[in-house]
Image (tube, rainbow over all chains, first blue to last red; front, side):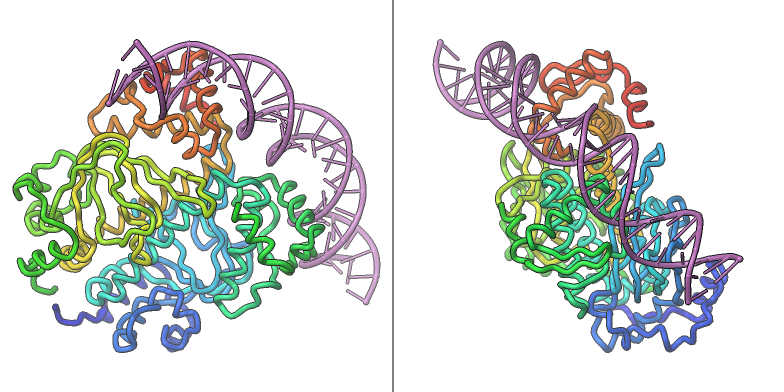
Length: 257
Length: 257
DNA sequence: CGAGGTGTTGAGATTTGTCAACCTACGTGG
DNA sequence: CCACGTAGGTTGACAAATCTCAACACCTCG
């Protein structure tokens, strides 16, 4: 194989000048090695001996307040973003302005891959709570992926995951009833939170009913009605944005048939 | 940069033995350089000087008859497939057997990326007419992508395209009426055919109304009804599977509002 | 030529959307 | 710290889109 290539300090500097100001955060805060979300992130499967090099991909962090946009449709694509903390939605705007939420993303998940194709973002990403993201310039990822096969494999895996997720949402939107959609939605959230060490049964919905409805292809009133129906059936407790899943197997049964 | 690495003859032989018999087709038929679909395919943006190396990715071709499966859900992922000729649908099976068509694919498009994540295909791909595909083992793609940046870039672009397509289908399924879905579907087919040098106004639907309905999240009867409505409105001529688009701007207008 | 898969059309059922009213929670500014 | 305004959430009545079931027509392929 070829010799190792570090991202040169010049390259970093040039990039930083081109794109935006370097963050004020001291460099050491950005290390992947100490990040408890590394497992689900881009460096997840990179062996420790390569990690020091791969960490160079993360050239800055950025703080996004609730309601702010990480990127907009039409923005130039430069970075893939890793969520260190917080919660985002991505959405696609119709030609006439209708908005379709295309995903919800939490800590350890990646954002921005949609721009990789033609150099411009097609989606936009909006923070649903105050969030922290790692900026990973695509040019650095590209270069590093050539040098570190485990990173390359991981990158492909992450992209493929997003493809598979899309197909799953097609299944949901194309052939499930409102009840099934909500059940699948809650189960999915629950699993992802559990996987991150949070409670899988008690959590707060960061998004509005409108957002959920858009994502699931339902009117916001339908979302509300189905949730109260679940409540009456003893499947969940709903208190506005506060959700407690009482009977997860009951929810899972809804998908089984 | 690192030195060029050719796929060694040994590696090829081992791979072929592992996976399946080498094709009977003489080697020279498989070259990308002569393929008129190269533009839309994986080697599309690879400069001529690298093409000879990249062509080695395609280690065989395979002929699939109508109705046969290129791969099944659960099959081990080894290859990405490039369609040389023919037409495919991919679909995802629900836990209870419902089928959701996740895409239709024609010459020059790639199949099988959904398995890249966990090593098993989640979708299945079924030929809707007799088809020819190029087999590109992922292990070879991976290796070559490290050596040929233009191929790497292209691979990422192709994956990102599929992600973006998914988001577009979400928009369609999540927030369009039956009419809008059909209009979008026909326009999309038309554009892709046109781009390949076929007529964008007269073509044959290779899939059934049921397939279309599954893809668009509609009952097959609704598909039929909307098509006849389009016919009555002078937008298209429909004769079973034979479609003539009479008024494409009329169809496009349906999406604009 | 026949059979089975595919496509069309109609009538009625059902789900979900729309509109409207009202309620709740939260944040801001006095 | 409270009050008020506003965004978000719930619920009801009704409308509309789409689905389901059923009958029939068509086309292709063996």
